[in-house]
Every structure is written in structure tokens, then in C-alpha cells.
Image (cartoon, rainbow, N blue to C red; front, side, top):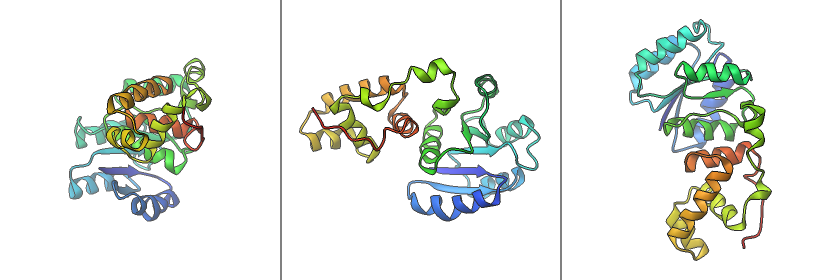
Amino acid sequence: MKILLGYENALCRSFLREHLAKTNVDLEIFVAGSIRDMLQIAAERGNITAAALDLELPDMNGLDGFHHVKAQLGEDIPLALIGSKCSNTQLRAYFDQGVAGYLPYTLAPESLLAALRVIGAGEAYAPVEMLSKESANDVPRGGWLTGRERDVLNGLLAGQSNKEIARVHGLSEVTIKHHLKSLRSKLRARNRTHAVCRAIELGIAEESQPAL
């Protein structure tokens, strides 16, 4: 998966380049400080999976920059925005413009990576805390997970397939699929990757609970 990121802040670019890009072998992360440089990297590297633009890039000019990059990269490449926290109304306006996700500066590194994987998989992403209050409160905490749902979540966090999770716990793959469906429903996740992302956001990724 090739991820192209445009960050105005040089320190952020350095961290992404020197840390995240080198510690996640399944991701190729390219960073730039302007739209012009981003498009040059995209032309040189090719096959970009997803991209994200900092709203503070010097040549961004609001959503004009977004639409320009979208036109250059093509409609098939998900394009997200990076910025400060915004209101639910503004967030929905961005999605109406075709934005694939919104990545606030406050995202922790592991949450940022999970969000990028969600976007790269073709899913929309928005942090739980930036959704409407009603929507956010509908998402249960980790204590609502059963022991088996916790086992499945731990397997997802470890990058295991359904078959591998089933083998570890001595269960059938059909049973794992059942618990995965229930887990996704509780976390309001659209797929496996999204479930991992939601678990990290809600702070339940590191919680432990004995299996049933």
C-alpha cells in the first residue's frame, strides 16, 4: 500500500519519513510539503493507494487544492484531508465534496496508521470524537465486548486471519465469523480494518478480558 501525505509542518514530515515509514513494512509512506511536490512524487512513484492533504499546505487554497489533486490523481484514489478538529457540520460538508476521510492533527501515530489503512481500503474515515454527540455516544465501550469478541479483536490487532484466530482458540472459522460480525456491529465498523481503527480510537485495543 502506497500512501502519499502532504504536511505543512516539517517536523511532522520528518517523523513520518524517519519513523512510521520505516516501522511499517506493509506501507510505503511518501511525504511532501506542498501540492506541487505531492503531484511530482505521485508521477514518479505511480500506483498511489491513497493520499491526504494538510489544509495548511502553502498552495492548498482551501478545497481548491483538494479538487486539483483529486483531478490529477484520479477519482479512484481516495483523498483525505488533514487539519484541526472541526465541527460535525463542517465534517459532513467535506464528505459531501468527495473527501475520503478527515485526519485531525491530534491523532496518535497508531490511530493515524489505522485510519490510513481504512482509507486505503476504500472506506470513509472520521474520528469518533468528531462525529455528532449522539452518534459517538451510541458506540459502546470495551466492557460491552464478550470474551470471544475480545479474542477476535486481539486477533485482528495481531493481523491474524479468521482461520488463524479459529486455530488459536480451537473454534470453527464459522464461529469466528459470527463473533466478528457481532464485534463490528458493536464498534459500528464497516470491515475488519475499520474495527481495528475504532478499537484504537475508543481506547479498548489494550484492554484485557478473560475469554468465556
